[in-house]
Image (tube, rainbow, N blue to C red; front, top):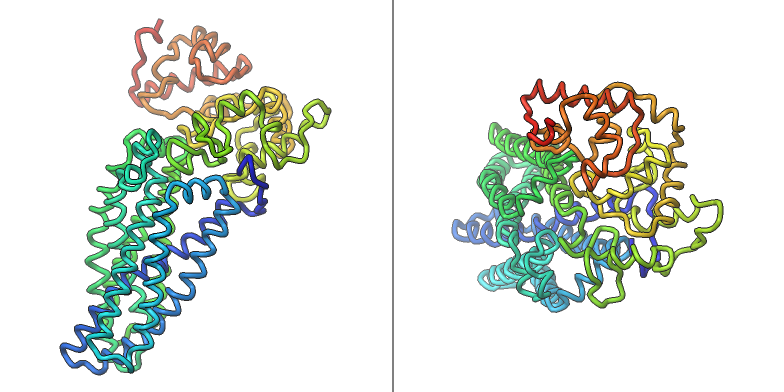
Length: 527
């Protein structure tokens, strides 16, 4: 959410709404690129072979192509701008100001693309064959150029490169993931050209024509899917290693969705080959299933990209909650340091309750939650913090302690809390109302793993390189004593006050894990 803009409350989650709009648009926009090449190459093939039946099907497929890409694609594209303008106005402003000429060029290509598509569709009976094909090539070149521009800007948001230092257009555009992402997306576009063709091919009554169309469609799908693993490997290896390592931590959203994407791509590939068993009898249901599974794979990939980018909306520059990571670039926005000094309730323009002196601190805390958290979280729906707090069993005191290290949780997947101590207390007061927990309940856990899960797992991993397993003294009494003052043990730790029996249970469990997994401890930690 933005400090200078009103907050748009989306009950089921702003992030989920953005995902729904964007994934559907991406699934169609990639078809718009690959499908354009499919049309002209298929037309050239049909005319060269004087294949009247293939040309007849291609005319009908062109109508389907125009309705899907020009109509739905254009509407959903506008929907993306509308949605991000309301959900993330500061990020939208940055993208427009940093790449205004890039967007202007893309809109020119888009105009040419739409014009050429309509001329191609209406020119089947009116234009000479070579001119008609020429319009098809104009469409494809414009569509591909549009993809190049958008890909450069989208990848800039993930790997901003040296742009954060000099704000140079081309430094941000030709960022580390620009070319691998373009290659990956173009391969996806070619595969989708064949997948969409399967749908219209499966509607054919003539078994011989349907068989030829299915085999031709598979020729586009199978090779494109086959090269995706290599292109994905290239893409991943252009992402900074520390970023990829972070997303495989305590909240590995990226790796989970990466697994979904791989599995769904494999299923798509298998179903595509299955269509070759009896191509002349392939049912519509199978082609729709292929498209649905491919949509799931595309959506999973987009979730991977978004998860890797967290906590930023523009890498190393603008956090997801519209606060700048270090200094303000002069556009009227606020950095985390500025808000820490001035306070969020005095900095934000659109806030109803600013009075931190009243007894009802939760009311102000609700305002702070809207400003700093609702860009990613809801209270009890998508990424609901109520469910999270129920798992952790944190009371108000513990919530406030954890807010001090918010930027370190889940390997830095969340922005740091920005605001004064009074605002931190107010936010903790509000969050504690979502899932009320008594101090007695928070001290009830006595099992070491439960203590770890509730208090440590958001930052620590069960691994030989984690500081909890390498530096904590092995002697139970010495370790329990060290845990009484966490900031002195690890400076970045919150000042949690665990009961004696929880500290002893945690130490016992940590030592068990060390022994079972062969983790060593440092000489300093052993003393």
